[in-house]
Image 1: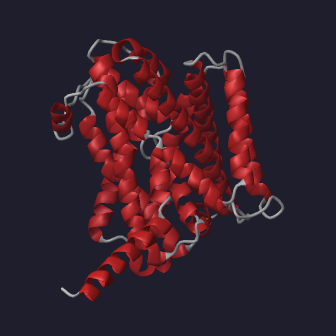
Image 2 (image 1 turned 135 degrees about the vertical axis):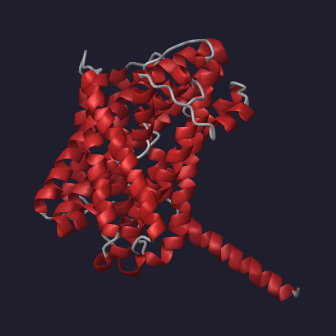
Length: 418
């Protein structure tokens, strides 16, 4: 092979790498944001209470996450619109209003959980929430308001990168990786209420309504279009894989420490504190830092996702490259989405667990509706043209939606029973 051909192939390879790096962001950020404070708590409980028995569920929902996020990206790239705007155009104002109000309530509850996670991570180090939460809220607002799109994306990606601490922690506890890998492919079921409810929570914490709105609006705000589809599809699948690798390590960390010693927990803070005598001070620090990072990323993403969705739905200006006077409502929604949850966390005696459960119930009601909207949109040739779902894509997507509907119905009903 001539030297010119070798140089040419290298140039093409580097061009492809640079192109991929230029579009990276939406898939990885949206997927990692699912591993927020509620997600970390859920994975910790899964491992602590049931060991490796639910790893096969995590393996399957990785595909579900990738499929649903890819559909959102594709719609955004083809239409150059966020999901809220398309729902208004195709389904009318009433359905749009229902979706937006429900999502706002659910998201405020979830953002409250993020600030509760921030408070918990600092309380592990004996720092009061009356210091940590206001400082964190101010930092979130200043970065989102003062920063450009490029700056906010860098912040999101940096926080996403810090999830590696959970992988490091997973190695520290010395798990049997052979056994853990086999558990990914060996379905195990216990027909008991605690097992089934926890399994449903594991599914529900991975795929979220706000995630569908966020990823679609994010690719639009980033200025991407259909020529970026192959790179974005790769990034979405990579993001789903990375986020559930992190989830895998959180589960095995608690499985080989807490489950092994019969220790039950109620949230991620309990998991961190319980790890100290079993895995050492460094493991406690890593777990606490991971909880802080996850909660902060959620505190950045959720107000943003809420503002994106509502502004798209009602035709208001939005985007981080716009000034306050250009996108006043966009920034106001973000500000309200930070202030109210932060204040709620600071109220003495507020039952934060009940707030989290309520937000999960509302998400459970909303998610199947949003996914059906997405499937109807992505199969509409007038909207998507040649980029409608292929038959195999529809089969997988509807099976995913059917499974999520069944799971969320059981979750909502069970929350009133137990």
